[in-house]
Length: 261
Length: 319
Image (cartoon, rainbow over all chains, first blue to last red; front, side, top):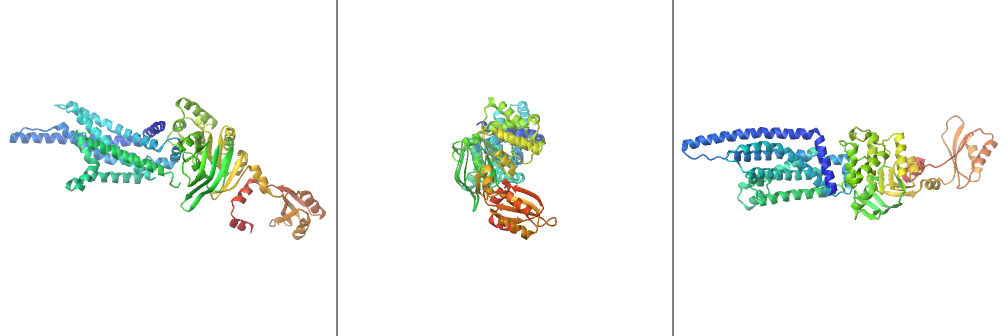
């Protein structure tokens, strides 16, 4: 798998010499920090209100502030991801094909799987790096919470984010391999992500078909993670999703050999 | 080293490569000559394992390009029409990347990169970003990446395009220096390049092979008979009569009139006959001023045009 590592290295190198990556990460962090602030103050306001209410009606106040913040914040992250991941993947294959380097890769002793995995893991790594600073404010909040929030909740949340992100990156990777136009790749990836997102709306219907669609919704499984629950069926869902789209990308890359120059 | 048998590549009804067969011997430099769209690049792409053939077989270093694609790729260095470079990488890091994907073991990488850089004269550009290099230097980087893993076979698609005359000579010398220890196929439009660097030539047109031979054989074979060019001041009709009388003379062609009475005439003789002295004698005998008499040899250019011009165009050109 020497090829995989070489390609991974190259992709990472490319991400970080381009100023776009920094602007991208910076924007993401500014938005997430801003919204974290908003969420925190909202939740605190809510908890005060509930305390007032309980004092009025003599009911014990029970409101888990940190958990609520966590859940809302991870919910927000998922929305940000929906917009940011298509941009991460849009140029992955388009650039190579334009430069003619795809021909170099495909006449070298590296398999298509190595190429696809190398690129996918690089985009996933960039994604993880982008997320890292957000952990700083959450960790701070957890440390300051009393009683302290179990770390499990934080870890489960991030596991969900990574799996959701990974799925959308795999999807975006596939779309990117189909077209030479970056903009089209980004738009289609976004539209497709949105589509599987809203499949969740089917939950309102009680029919059997509704249940199937719900399972397929990429966000449905995410919600469990935000509650600190790691459900095996959700894990299977995400892994299957990623494997499916990696497989499709490999096929698509192979098909480039047949496309007329 | 390379055996191509009945290679065909069709795109729907169109045959880009039509039943092509040829071999390349170990250590040889084979030239691939043909007009645009003849099928040169398509053939090379099949050889390098980039695209599959519709039918036929290709074997490189004993390996079938379809069945043992990975093995074939280990043995080939390939420079496509446009050098496959990453603009944001430095020359050094790019060659390191290529060395890695070509499976050069870690301990040999530095040596191989040095060697490739030295051979292509890229020493003083090693740490430069590729996007800052001129076309000529980018081309050299392209050649360097084809060499970096020291492959048995090197396939070059128009390697001297975009280079200045000095660089062209360097590249040609480089290619000649590589022969023997490497087997090389290069495609080109530049005809002198073929006669200067190649051991053998494959002329390909519209997907089919028009000729396979050494440059020398091709030029002498198609030379047919001798061709003489004379410049003489003489009345045309009388000149024709006189020349027709010379035994062995076949065609007489008079070029459209230029300076007054002076005619430029091409006389073709049957194979093996040298009629120059007789022509000179006849002209002098008639008292006509003779300005020029020389033998015209058929260049590779003529052969190329001859072989790649179809009959319809032929008729048009000679009318």
